[in-house]
Amino acid sequence: MPSIAGLNFRYFYATMQAFRKDLRGATIMNRIAKGYKSGQLQRMALYFGNQTWTGQQGDIDRAVAERGRVLHEEYCEKCHKQAGRFQDKETPPLAGQSIGYLLYQMTDYRTASGGMRQPPLMQERLEKLSDRDLHSLASFYASELAAPPQTTESGRTKPQQ
Image (cartoon, rainbow, N blue to C red):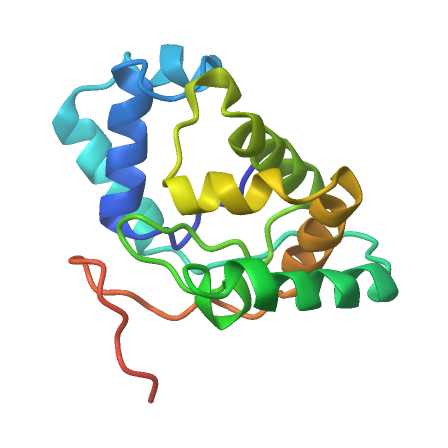
């Protein structure tokens, strides 16, 4: 289960619309999203976007997380900036998500299963990574509990003060 408090408005809304239209992998979310109208999904996106981001706590092996940090810098930093804290209308924050959720998502993205189409660069990079690498990346992101930067409704990052 992902943390969704503080998600970018456009990312949340687009994701829920994709579930509603069966454009994302078949999960219970497809059925749930179909029960809401667009205006209701917009209100949900606004509500969750205005919540404070909270990462998920868990036991993390620091050596494994450090290996994940190195992999992140080599394979992921270009899009998932700020150690996975960055978010915009197309990029969710990875920092603070649970290891289990991240592993599930990265495995689906790597194999393109469940209708989870990703940018070609992401698929290419994930295909090069072993299961051990994915676990290291997930451990790294899970260990990054600081809040992601605030974003504007348009998805632009607000300047840090």
